[in-house]
Image (cartoon, rainbow over all chains, first blue to last red; front, side):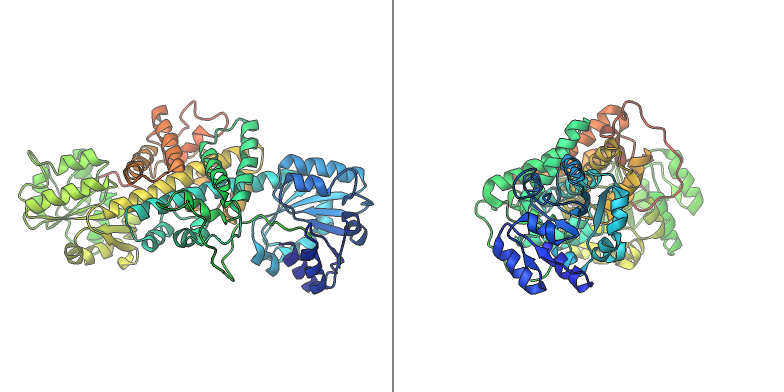
Length: 307
Length: 307
């Protein structure tokens, strides 16, 4: 994800000075390709950059790279802007904004609801949270990533974009788990699944996940665009928000349970479409083989690499 | 629903000879309008027609109009074709096909995944189940109802269309109940709901029900296009199929529970979008007032009148 964003920004004429990845060889590879420096430390990234994009796996990883002590992006961060793209708990964004401000830096959320292909093409759907002043400073840069800004929405202050992203993924996960039940039952009834998907697409059962995951559920093609583990994590974030707000969310809870079950079964690294492994008859005992798949239509996804 | 189908078929040059409704005045009104005869008995409808469309509320009503004894559409039914449009338990279609065959008549399922507006315009989405021979006989007639047949799919033998329709509505109800949770949580978090819906529509949270029900959930506009009671009924049919097929459907079960709760709260006659009354903070204690709404975009719906 990060690599593709870097490639695209370079295409647009930006100088990508530094890259970092927890796996050094990943950073070195993209560094060689685009002529950037693969940094050994987080502090070196900050030293070499005006604006730093971060794309990590979860809250814990995020706390790690913005640590108060030791190697951290916050070391020598005065004047820097950090644009954070991972799907995190909203409170983490609020906390990081405070830490960054103390260090004389600023943060912005740019939650992404798109995947690798869109990162490369500069057509990411971005939900922006943070100070409007900071947003205005980096808006031209963000426009390059989101089809000239057409796919970008300013949502509110720090944490707001993360809230909305959690809601997007909560609803997406419900629709995905529900679709897996519908298709599994259709198969058990010996209905033709391709006809069923076509009928779904023309009726009240239609959804984005039907278009992105329906055929994959049918074919057991769970090459990962948005992992079951991320689905479980994001539904978990949303459920925590719901609990705190005292909103009754039985469907979200059921979807969370399904993706959690999937992770526990050892299928966490498969695409979220693998939730069908829990519902289709005779599936789920063994991990399905992973077919190679060069391209695929857009999926809402959480990026998993950092740059 | 039935009245609009009758109007459209008359527009297409068919002679609509007879109409029937359990509420006599409803039948008389449409009869006057299109110059048909409002029958006092079901047997009279059969006597006056080559092809009879039925659109009833549920399994019980369907068993009633095809009763083995007393006034029944099956009285003197030799050579007639019954096209049954209601969403019923698949087994009912199988049973009625047998009864009709004994009476020298034939049946066909034409499950509809559209609403009143589409019935009037002849653009109903139809799922056809039954003998292919019977289907071929009435295909030209059905084409007139489904945009020249573009919106019609032959699914299989008797009961197959009902199975597929139950699946469509099961998935639709899951997506609807899930959306109600997402929007309710968004409101509790004080996010702007119009922005949230716009973001949902551009991401993995997008669905047909977002387009048809999202704004109504926000505005508490639950004018009925597809009732909560029907949603509960159809999810119940799907759950019974799932139980029999031993398919695990926790999301469908959660959606069924929500719509059942809604019916028990006395909201069964509101649109399925009223499931938001169970999730939005401060709602659900009193029935929201019903705004008058002349037109509205398409919704997947179960018709509730018979003709």
